[in-house]
Image (cartoon, rainbow, N blue to C red; front, side, top):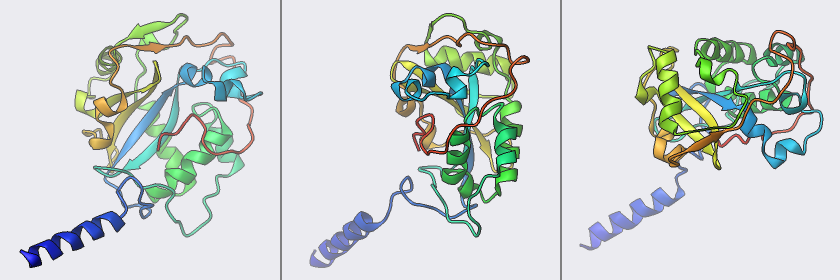
Length: 246
């Protein structure tokens, strides 16, 4: 019994010292799958943090935004790597930032996403954002959500169903809906390392991301249409854009 007690004590000590998968920094290129994260821009723009930022193109520019690309997150089956060490400084060139502003309308967001998540993909900035765009543009946004001019109140299941109908290859286990308070926060779609759709891991459990029966989609603000307002302004650099939950 004494031997068993010592073994249990030693195991508990090791468990306490070991980092959890969610807090471990991780190694670049070592992960299980990707979560493509689409943010409902009007929900972000309704937050005090966004309203306190003057000149933010996502919320006060000429072009209205609905779903935007929040990021592409390397994930473990449980937990995720973060801010991985790379052989080179995680620098995102200005030209690359300008190229991404049509679907990621914030310089802060672009820089933050590469530093925190892109470094863990094992890809350089050019390849990481090229892959992000490829996956984002491969998802069809349901027509119902392309021009939302009044508040919508839906269940997470209704939002999911609209995406499943618009994307026949998408299955329920490949998508999750996240809340931001009472509002729709973001939508996550999972891909394997081969960039093919796959089932999500424990990180995207629906009850973890949003347990509400109903969520609100604030309307897309008024502004010039997408074709009229392709150019977005650069913002100053600061981490934490769009409340990156990881």
